[in-house]
Length: 433
Image (cartoon, one colour):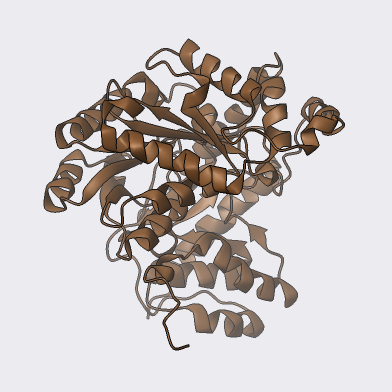
């Protein structure tokens, strides 16, 4: 074309979590059974939402008003309910107008980074969740800036590294926190959150706290939402129903805006998010109608507790099985339904491989590349059908490892998967020529 129409940040829009699916589908077509450990969809993994939730959804769907637009901010009954629950938890108090609904948090993330000044940057964790890191990098047309989560220290953020990055990059305007973290399952201690709030205050930054898994934090994890410690620092918290109900296909998420009037620039930015949503008219109505009815039901908290206990037990068992491999660093998750294993420095070598059928070896060959953990992941897929996500290319990290899920509901199958994964790692590491 006579004028280049490609956005300078287009090459940053990579989502390895789903891109590996195309390769896995080709392997599946060759006759290999695929174990889908790449994406966090509880329903696809066999967690059927309970009948009582489905009955509430069905009843709401039968109401004519479910077919109408909602207000741009979201249905008032949903926003009033969320604000009330937030305020009961203590910490900062909000009103219904501090809440804005989106068609899933992917929509919210895209809108937030798209509304930022082109020179404003938001620093996030490493490993990074790719929806955040890709959208932020695409907005800036430059690689995503990160602070380190330290696998040698239980995945705690390196606050000294965070401050160093902020001082070295004066264009940084905000800090991303994902709590509980994806991909590591780490839960930020309250004192760490408070320290990050203080860093933001000192440097005049705002905070984005992605709390989509906040109600799936494990017992004794010490989970605290940002609202408990944010004080007077401008911030945005993100939540949704896709992981909780679970209803990922509903595409229903919202943001909570804290201290919008603490800074004129942040207030104008917050208003631009509402204006952007006005151009779309509104978010989907049905899940908003359902939200207060499901979350306000007395069966909801016990239902979540049962799921969380199951994830916590799987995390414990995964750490126990993979602890047999000295070349791996593995910490049991503290929330959500993911875990990450990191290869120690020097464990991975270019010549390593796993024995696989000729047909599947041919399928992965064009995708091997130079990232050593991605090479392992594709060899694992070809040899065993286990589909996990490489840490380096999947989560914008300089660490080499892989993320897997804790979603397999069948205890025997989950145990078999862990043992298969452990044996594959050991065989791969011992295969170096």
